[in-house]
Structures are given as structure tokens and as C-alpha cells.
Image (cartoon, rainbow, N blue to C red; front, side):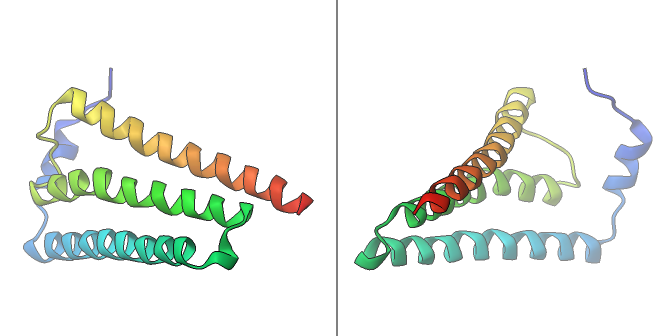
Length: 122
């Protein structure tokens, strides 16, 4: 059971339009740069034959994971901020999105540690 405070809920919903605009613009920028940047790096890694080695496969895996996280998790956060920082999707969706976010973080940590151990022997 999560802690919940009605006072904190009122503070989040009474943000100025400028603050909401800045948050939404920042989140949109982060989503766009993350998806486009990782997509461009992925295309480069696939097209350039000299990059078809183990360390770059780990980088490609990280790019794909980041694209999925940005395309799946961030839009829910974006809509939540747009709706006054309230979650309107239900408890199950909240748990699934939180699980995907945590899974992405652990996946990134695992891949970075695996990359370091593989690159040490190459």
C-alpha cells in the first residue's frame, strides 16, 4: 500500500500554466531526442560493417532498450503531467509502467557490466 497525501495532490494540481508548459516541453524534447538519437546510432551500428563486434552489439542492445523505454514509458509520464500530475490509467497500468522502467534500468546496468567484462578480454 502506497503512502498518499491529499495536500501533496493539491500542490501538484495548482501549478501555473508556464510551469506545466515548461515540463511538457522538456519531456517532449527528452522523448524526441532519445528516440531519434538512439535510432540514428542503431542505424549506424547496423550499416557499418566495421562495427559488427561484441562491444557494439552491447551498444546496439542499449539503444534498442532506450528506444523502447522512451517510446513506451515516457508518453505515460507526459500525459500524467499534462493532466495535472494525476495518473488516470489505473493501478495495473501504473504497476506495468513502473516495472518496465525498473526493468530497463536493471537491463542497462547488466549490459554495461557485461560489456566491461567482454571488452576487457578483447
